[in-house]
Image (cartoon, rainbow, N blue to C red; front, side):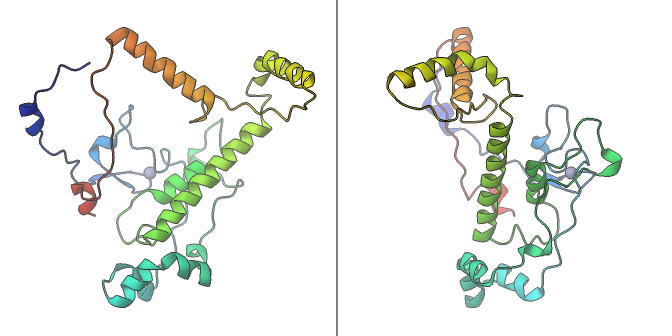
Length: 244
Ligand SMILES: [Zn+2]
């Protein structure tokens, strides 16, 4: 796609820096970088235009704050072993409730269609960065565990939804496939288990992979074969990370 880059040009690339998180969500005060604007020129990942509002996490006791932010031997030990301490002492999960399927959107922002707060919206709100001390974001390894747990739970719920709503996902469309499978199995004296089709909207599913592949090939047809294969990894010494 691109013209071949000469080595001179390659060494003259200046470091990219997104600057500071200067943009603020008018509803929930979440902080953003300027470049995070979505296609409708808004910042909506935090609270979906004011639809989500959760109670603040309880005030962090000073002792805990010091252990999380200090550089003393004691504090460093605490930060290093925070997951073990959490498991041993079963920290009262920051004093506020987790997500439940009873939770609803903010009353004055209710829409006609969907009023329930989704698990994804809940965690997006919790994980958004706001000014002031955040117990969640200061908890290091325990924060990472929180993020992984949130991801797994959210994905689990979505898989469960797909499993229970196969009818609405127009799975009967694949009836022919199921018939072929049943015939082949019975020819081999086998029984077919329960078939669950993952739609292409589920990232990483065979249908999603197939769609991505087709899209990539369509681009190759239009623009020709690519000459660059760009991969992207995060580096902890990025200025955006060091500034926080
Ligand atoms: Zn917001």
